[in-house]
Structure formats: C-alpha cells, structure tokens
Image (cartoon, rainbow, N blue to C red; front, side, top):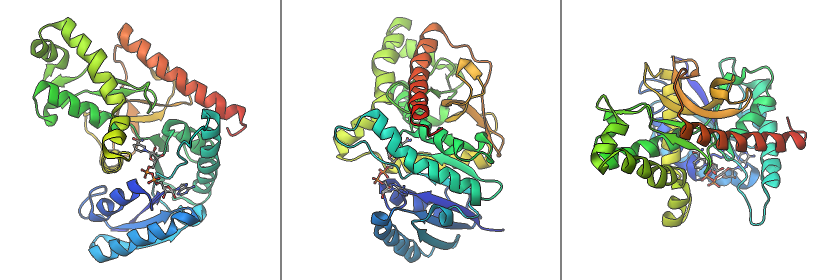
Length: 334
Ligand code: NAI
C-alpha cells in the first residue's frame, strides 16, 4: 500500500506533540496503513519540530516511512493527501478581533494557496488553529481549484466534550449515546444540541427528565449547566491545567480524520463544513453541524427539526460567523 502523506502545521507546538505519535502509530489511518509525515513550522518552531522528529525515529514505528521538516508551505504540502492545519496565531494581549483575523489570514491564506498549487488531487484539510471556522474559510478561498467540501474546521472536540458530559450526567456509557450535535462556530457561541440524541435507543431528553426530576429540570440543566460547560470547557482546561487542551484536541483531530476517511456508517459526528444553505446557514460559511461520512466527504445530516430554542442559539453563532467573514472581507482577504 502506498504511504499516505499527512502534513501537520504547527508541528512543534503542544497539539503537534500529542498528534504526531498517534498518527505514526496508525491511530488515524489504520493499523496497516503506512504514513509519511511532513511537519510545517515557522523558523522559531523548527527546533521543537526537529526534536519531535528525533523521538518519532526512536519509536521505530513500523508504519512511518519518513518525516520531513520544513518552514516552506509549498514543500510541506507537496503531494499531501491530508493536511492538518494546527499552527495559528494566538490572540495576544490587547489584540482586537480584527487584528487576530488579519494575523491568521496571513497564515491561512498562503497555506491555502500552497495547497492549491501542490497538494495531491485527493487532498482533505482539517483546520484546528483558531479561529478555526474562519481560518478554514480563508484557506478554502485561497484554494479555488480544491472543492470547498474538502476543507473542514474541527468541532469534534466540542462534540466529544458534549458526549462525555452527557454520559456523566446520565451515568451511561459514552458508547450508548447517539445523535449529539454541535452547531455553529467553534467558540463560546456554539450550540451543543441533544434534542435528537438517544441513550440506549431512548430519547436523551426523556432520560434526563427521569434522572433530574422532570422535563423542566432537564431543560434547566441543559441551558444552565450542559451548554455553558461544553462551550466553556476550553477555558476551564486552561484555568486548571495552566495551558490549553492539547491531548484532547489532538485526539479529536485524529477522530475527525479517521471518521472522514473510514466513513461513519449512519452514525453522526460533528464538523464545521461548507454550508450550502442547510438549516438557513448562509452558503459559503464553515459552520458546525451534525455530519456523516461515506469515506470521501462529510455531509450535513438534513431534515432535523430545530425548536425555537435551538434555532435562536444557532442564529447567534451563525451571526458571529457572518461577522468574522465580513471582517475578513473588509480586510480584502477573501
Ligand atoms: P502552540 O502554541 O503550542 O503551537 C502552535 C505552533 O504553531 C507553534 O509551534 C508555532 O510555532 C506554530 N506556528 C505558528 N504559525 C505557524 C505557521 N504560519 N506555520 C506553521 N506553524 C506555525 O499551540 P497549540 O496548543 O498546539 O494550539 C494550536 C492551535 O489549535 C491554537 O490556535 C489553538 O487555539 C487551537 N485549538 C483548537 C481546538 C479546536 O478544537 N479546534 C482545540 C484546542 C486548540
């Protein structure tokens, strides 16, 4: 079997360190699937990436055919089948949102252009670096020859956080849950939705009502505990751990690509994919939704009813995505 070329940007960072070894071990593409790693860093991150590469060598992974490190996106993405765009510019002290978007446009625009020029014909891209949805929009806009459906932003971590919180509240195994969804932006406005979810085949809303003493108590728990806990989990991890979630983000990125390329059968996961207008989300935005994969692309699960509460939450998050897109447009980036 030919090796799959996986390019990881920001490979010298925290998520990169948690990501590379599991990819090389076969957790993402499968236990029989050889992989070639390309690590992209900026000059000041190259040493850290080189250190990771030395350790990769010391693991003697049977599936890892080679590792290349570069600070040139055109080298990093040459022939890439999968690109995991992790490296991004964090928000500095006193940085306005427009400055953050502009700084990241300066990263994701050139990377999209390089992907357009040199990536393999079957390239799939997942954007992890924040603001992930809008960074995906910027990269895709800079890659006019790559179908926009090949890009996605990571909301799998939010999805997995929602599963874990629900499993804990219901005292049920994670594996017994189906139909959880993350809608909108990978930000505090996201909408983690359990309206269509089931536990052991039974509606989660019924199970929560039974557990918490009625439908009103279940609704309050969802609004006051579950949604803010999932949406605010990144901040909670930072305050407890002292730095941002890296291992769980890497795990989610691996699960995202795994499910994309292996398919999900009829199970849902969540990813921020290109909108074609589903659920009233303006076409062209990268907005999270429940998705399935047939092994080639994620598709939005259609035909779900959003109640007034869900609709209002999604509208708030989509308004934020529209504002980010408009700010990027105003910069002349897209
Ligand atoms: P980090 O700061 O440890 O690593 C980022 C790395 O990216 C650094 O080594 C830096 O040198 C590199 N980098 C910066 N600009 C680059 C460029 N133009 N090309 C290549 N590399 C570049 O950060 P960490 O913890 O690894 O997080 C990375 C990103 O992932 C952040 O934007 C973070 O907000 C985001 N994130 C996203 C999550 C999600 O669920 N979507 C969850 C957690 C983090």
